[in-house]
Amino acid sequence: MRSTTDSALWSRADDGTSPLVVLLHGQHGTEEDLAPLLPLLPAGVVAVSLRAPFAEGDGFSWFETADGVREAAAEHVAPAADALRAWIDEVAPTAEPDADDLPDTTGPSGRARRPVAVVGYSQGGAVAIHVLRRAPRAVDTAVILAGFLGVGDEPGDDELLDVRPPVYWMRGLRDESITLMDVQRVAYFLPPHSTLTTAEHPLLGHELSEVFLAAAARYLGAWAAGFSRD
Image 1 (cartoon, rainbow, N blue to C red):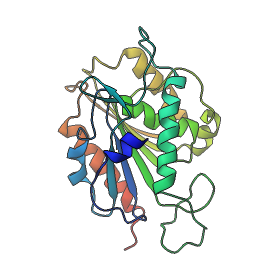
Image 2: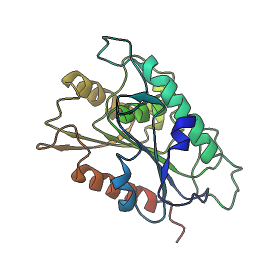
Image 3: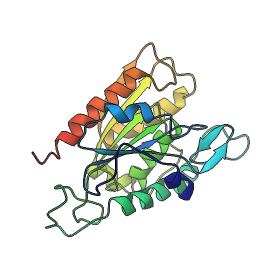
Image 4: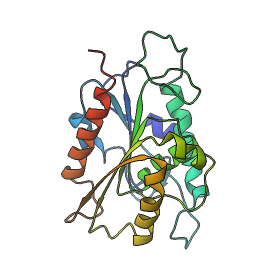
């Protein structure tokens, strides 16, 4: 993830303990795409917009598929999900349960760590979903903007049925980039595997609209308020 971390946009200096919001752009995008969300987030969180590792066209992508393949498979998304999880483990490490400087949340090892949310748009949304599918306790919540998931099983799918982390899924009903099959896959998978909130907009397509960014900020504000130390 070297190209990702070297090109990251941070909302402010990371203090290592505040709730962390990780932003993932879409295919052919850059870390600038989700930057408009940064000033909308509550002051108590630290947010970072990452750049995907693969140069593609004028932007970057999180994973690649074989030539002529329209649908991504789970195996295509998995390396990006694992790399993101490893990076999150570095910036949100676990600690002993009685650590005084961390909010009361539990990481994948069962020890305390700072809260982590992942926001993914389109291809970045697929990575966010597959982080949960491969490591259900790696992050605390996910916001999916016009996202999809890869075809095939993942090792954490059964555990995810028990964990059911909160997920906010938004999409535009005029989206012509995400196929009906993509939508049906997400609609079939997320309800039993998450505590799901959905939002559909009849006039929006495949875009990072102000409507969706504002809604994501409100959701994340409510999520972060649960970890307030005031």
